[in-house]
Image (cartoon, one colour):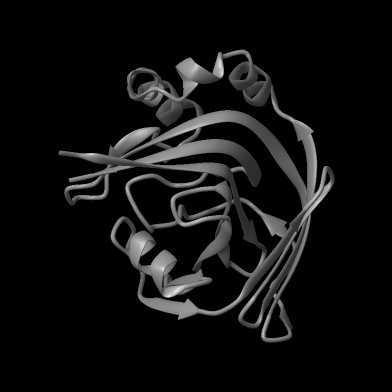
Length: 201
């Protein structure tokens, strides 16, 4: 019997002018409770996961690939204008802008339909063309299947990020794409409202 694990929240992806690239998952509801995790790829291609607990780290590692894992307290604050995250020497202040045309289109799809595996399969080819590297359904190469039901999309306006007190530069595209799993984050810095379903055996 296969089991479905449903995560409701947001995925925020951006790069910096120094070459660092980040994907922040902020989950309001999940089988692991409410939490935030940070996936970070350095300019040299080193992939780091920052997770708030061993349980979260083990679940994420079973689906994605990292070179290093840090388990430490993560604090995140979200309001209409921005997202603030601090985690293990990393500090990020992200300003969120307007909804994109794709965001308006996503909001027009009834939530019940948008969250279905059939819908995510149907729009996967469109997502690949519209946002290079983005997939809405796939597998990480193991027994787990995963699909992303995006329901909104906002652009990012600016970011201030430091790592161990060192500034990482201004906002930049996610280029080259991050290499954590089968799907990348959009190239343009953005925050996506999403329901992620992970199906395990």
